[in-house]
Image 1 (tube, rainbow, N blue to C red):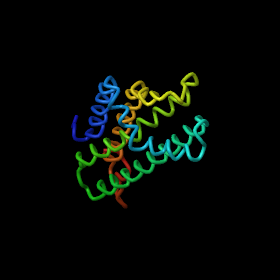
Image 2 (cartoon, rainbow, N blue to C red):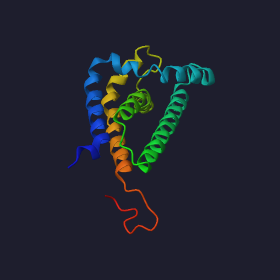
Image 3 (spheres, rainbow, N blue to C red):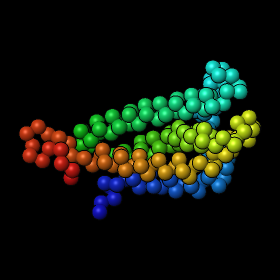
Image 4 (cartoon, rainbow, N blue to C red):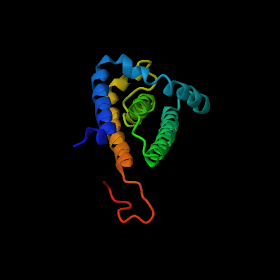
Length: 169
């Protein structure tokens, strides 16, 4: 088993374990809300007002999911280009990508939890600190993402006229 073939999966696993451990600090998970969720809270408050929480949360969740899809599409395109040029996976850029995604993935998990927890009072000023409950679960996304990245990266490049075109190595 070559570990270089599973670099992204290993980094995803390490990221997931770190997310699980960091969730006990409460403060660090809360800080992942600040770059994306706080501005989106403000914008959704302007659109829906301060009391229409379900619609605000749905808008924020939709925008966060859109951001996640755009970031992943960009990274996958970059990854496919690297593979076609037969370049190695840039571990540093993968780690930076996973760090950036921390600020998108965890708020998504938090807002999914909020929308499915009707007994929560959204007007509670301490609600943001409940992200530590969802942090380990949303952190599992990084294992899945690492596996997908390794599948893309390790797939053979299709060559025209080749008998082995399209087969996995």
